[in-house]
Amino acid sequence: MSDDDTRTGVSAAPPDLGTLHQFHGVQPVLPVSDVSRAARWFRDVLGFELDFMAGEPPSYARVKKGDGSHGDPVYLRLWQCGTREARPWRGEIVIHVGKDIDGLHAAYVKRGVTVIEPPASQPWGLREFAIREPDGHVLRFCGYL
Image (tube, one colour):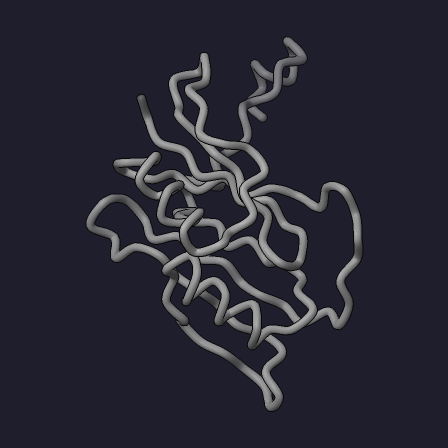
């Protein structure tokens, strides 16, 4: 704090740590009952690729979608917690899609994905739909109108 700030009682703004340290992504961790099964589901049903799987037997994995050509890739980490808890709402992850949100929805329906909200245009300028994956997490896919 400068002498002027001390006298007026106004403190200087803290540094923007996100810029200073170059924050550049978030990788949510989803607790799952079986890492191998969850990784296969994300790969085979939702079209993600397996980025890594760790442990023997596997207890941690990461799946990825996207190559950076249309924004940052989406990474999800899968953590073996051993049980499925039947909670009505465990959390939600929003995944932005560059085009054809309705086509993605149709493809997931054909693959037997549990859709909990069909595609709808929202007043905030997005078209979105939501699914529930086998461990109860909600994944909301959205694209700009």
